[in-house]
Image 1 (cartoon, rainbow, N blue to C red):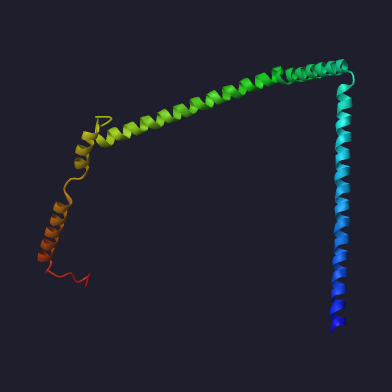
Image 2 (spheres, rainbow, N blue to C red):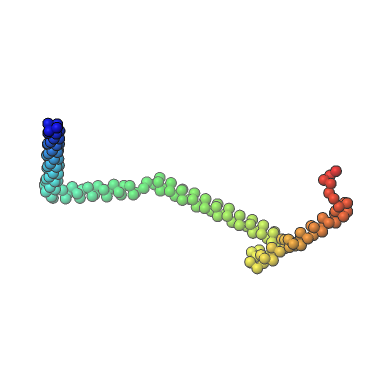
Length: 170
């Protein structure tokens, strides 16, 4: 039992020591990578500093020239040719004509609507809300209760005339 126990403990201790060695190697590699990254960043910063510090007067002149070039390009883009201006004028005229046609169409529809209202409701034109209630009574000749009573009376009269029972066409 002691031999098997000691053998298993040796294998576990050796595997744990191997794992520790692997971890140390990884840490060492990570440190090297970080150091490499820092050195690259420093070299980039140094290059930028050298570029900015070398002949400030010439860099200012270059900046002025670049600004002038940008302004010239912007002026060229903003200045439209005569053809473009004429094209825009034609487009504006088309829009105005289209809007005028739509306005005329709407005016015709409104006039037709008013004519129909006059035909339906009389020559009063735009009837106020109080007149609408009076017109509603005009369109409905009697109350529903009265109409039902009249229909029942007509049915009673027809049964009396035709023998009282409807045979369904026989």
